[in-house]
Image 1 (cartoon, rainbow, N blue to C red):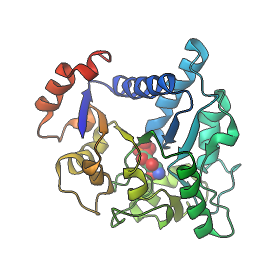
Image 2 (image 1 turned 90 degrees about the vertical axis):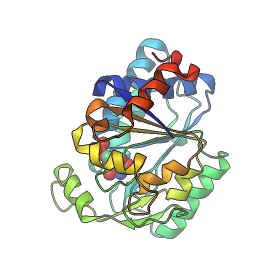
Image 3 (image 1 turned 180 degrees about the vertical axis):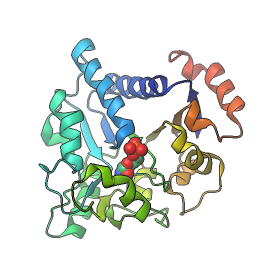
Image 4 (image 1 turned 120 degrees about the vertical axis):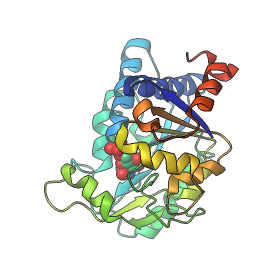
Length: 259
Ligand code: GLP
């Protein structure tokens, strides 16, 4: 795991967008894993700007979102399909047939989960997976106690997550979601986790420097051979080894072009 601490949220977001853009330019048919949440809105805003101003081309890209609520149709403003259309898909030249999210309206949810795994395999796996982190330490919707080897499946949301989601729903927020499993995420060739703001400081410290535990799904990323965690100063404030992470970013050749 590499941890990159940027001064502001804007700096952290622009580094994440730059890494994604570089990967897409290097491989136009990139298989890109996408995430939702407030943090990612700023990333998508920058990717849209790169598409409009610098010709960043999504026409051959294939995307797989981490998760979707059970029981919400795509036209529901609370659904992640709606979110993705609004923030990215309808604003760039992606072929919507290649922009995948689990279908939370499927009659047979187990079959839908198995099908999602199959689709990812048919694309030869995910090249780069963008991740946020929830207050419970979840990646995707892998709530506490999600097995390290879990695959795409339905998951009951933790009370804290439901509470966190309340502002996005007029009525009762959904209580279940389909999510890629921790095992599915660990198979992606590269992971990029972005977290900003002081409210993420505790959970970031646990995920990065704490023990690997199913109670904090993001801690499983410590097992991933190529995982980059990008945080702003606020989200990094509880990390104990910040000086070391900063030295690595300043000195490792791989990061020179991003300075
Ligand atoms: C939801 C998503 C997660 C995301 C989290 C963080 O729970 N399912 O994938 O990481 O939101 O959201 P925010 O960026 O709003 O803090």
